[in-house]
Amino acid sequence: MIDYDKAFETAVKAVQTEGRYRVFADLERICGRFPKAKYHPGNDEASREITVWCSNDYLGMGQHPAVVEAMQKAAGEVGAGAGGTRNIAGTTHYHVRLERALADLHQKEAALLFTSGYVANEATLATIARILPDCIILSDELNHASMIEGIRGGRSVKRIWRHNDLEHLEELLIELPTDRPKVIAFESVYSMDGDIAPLSEICALAKKYNAFTYLDEVHAVGLYGARGGGIAERDDVLDQIDIIEGTLGKAFGVMGGYIAASAAIVDAIRSYASGFIFTTALSPVLVAGALASVEVLKTSNDLREKHQERAERLKTVLAEADLPVMPSVSHIVPIKVGEPVLCKKVTDYLLQRHDIYVQPINYPTVPKGTERLRLTPTPLHDDGLMDTLRGALDDAWTALKLSRAA
Ligand SMILES: *Cc1c(COP(=O)(O)O)cnc(C)c1O
Image 1 (cartoon, rainbow, N blue to C red):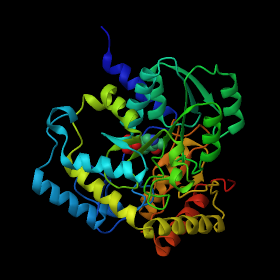
Image 2 (image 1 turned 135 degrees about the horizontal axis):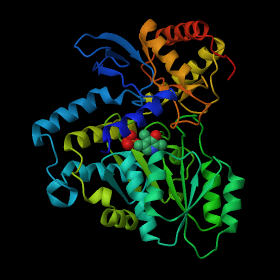
Image 3 (image 1 turned 60 degrees about the horizontal axis):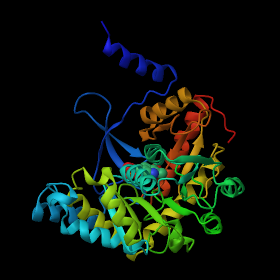
Image 4 (image 1 turned 90 degrees about the vertical axis):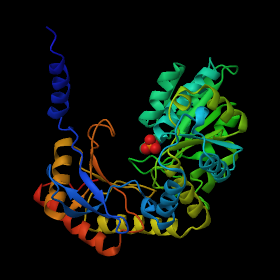
């Protein structure tokens, strides 16, 4: 007899032994009071109020009145679901309008929606390899799991370049035959370290070696650039990126993913990508909310400026408290713990003693030995919340005897 259950239990035990077993926090966000939420510690309806310090709703757009209203209005007008795949009855006027708005955001001819940013990366990268059968993909070593899966799914030849290392990228490019298609796949803001890729220099190399560029701007769209078009907009290289990929689930506060590119590229991905074709279209309610969010962030810099100011303040406050803040040039504030069991312990301590919620970030999301807390201050994390956080972290670091060296 094969004991199937046992195999699954053993797999979970392995994760538990390494101290990286994941426990989800049961939360109820409170609309209008971000970053406050209700936390359900047990299996009942009892809850208590906590402060969220690790949300990817970077600007609080998930509760922006314009976004919530647009979603309520859409639900009232067209109902809950799209009712089909994009090809079969599922393309609504909301989808068409959002794709236009995203193409405009990135100064491209067209855009294409996916169920999520993950699916956008996986489906698009795999499809690129199908359309360019002998292509070689040059992938930054810290690329997101969804890009890695897409590249793997495309089964093309892959070369990994050291993270943000231009010399290494050029070394690899020089060696490749000039007649082989080359795709450089990378991110702008790397969300675990908070560093930013040198886009102009990468684009210059792409030009020199006639390579195609695929950029994941998931942690930058809505947040950087004069209209929220990301780091490529900020650095004025939008026209040098062939495909820009983004999410509607982080700074835009809703759900869904997309690519923006030339009309020809989008038409090909639309026609070949299995992960786009064979799945129900996003709910028009989500699409309406995302559209409102994109439009709000296109027209005003207020939230973006406040966001950067808050991130800088938090870095200063925590460094002054002698906490091991890892260097970051973006809105992400990582604090090093360096060990998975302690990482979980410190977050449990913060939640239980201080009603502060930060999820531990462990392997495989980050390399072993670099386990960390990843704080994401938003425009709604005020000075009072920051002071409370500093006190709580200071207490936790002392109580658990954690290292203060970054
Ligand atoms: C979160 C994330 C994605 C996936 O986006 P979702 O919309 O959440 O599926 C893709 N790339 C990176 C770098 C991410 O961090």
